[in-house]
Length: 338
Image (cartoon, rainbow, N blue to C red; front, side, top):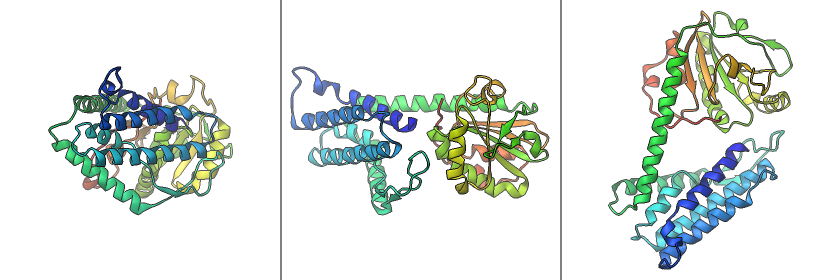
């Protein structure tokens, strides 16, 4: 829910920044300007119509509808005004936002969220190819408006800050001190502690049921757990800053998808005394700590980094054999939730 709402807020802010000159009193009302204003008005109005009273499914459906309409309006603008420099504003806007081409929302979990929507893979692939083609054209264009350059610079600066924050956190985590143990419980209320996994290499993964980046990271974390379990790696998914009821509902609905993760909950829930804050000084979630066989902290990963093998690198620091090709993989922007 929080991720969906924050995405819509981002759209609203972007809409407010699109071609301010076109909305100024007395500005020329050319055809392209009118079309651009229509897109801006649509984004503003659509974002304001979404609220927290909607169900998770309604939120997802509304977001899909909004992105689909944005795709259609943006594509129409580019087709109608192929030589107008303002087409790059639209292309820049379309790059991070697009529909998923859901054809059936499928079953819902206990909180009413779609578990695995059915997607038109061909349509999604075609749209991705089109956006990549536009992105390549944008990189070579000589008539790009200054505001597009400014937004790109802002994104790059933000990415640099996030990466620096992640590097600083990782260095701080590589102290070699003994990982603080703390009481956890599993979905059945049975006690769990780090000491239960003595002699193992442990990945302590702090997450929450409301955290979008945490959900996005889980398939990769599960894959890592499955791949390295034969070398004695155990992944503990420790739910923090959440409620026990939501934890239990989420685990019962989703644990089957992640059979190699040990699901636990911090009974201190949202208290400032919870382990993620008091003992591990977590800045945001997801956050993963790698603990070696001697119980020492050897690495930390702040946020979710698609296609960036930071967790695997941490395992290598703990003595796990990790293929060099995996460690040489690419990178992308980290994502966290406060």
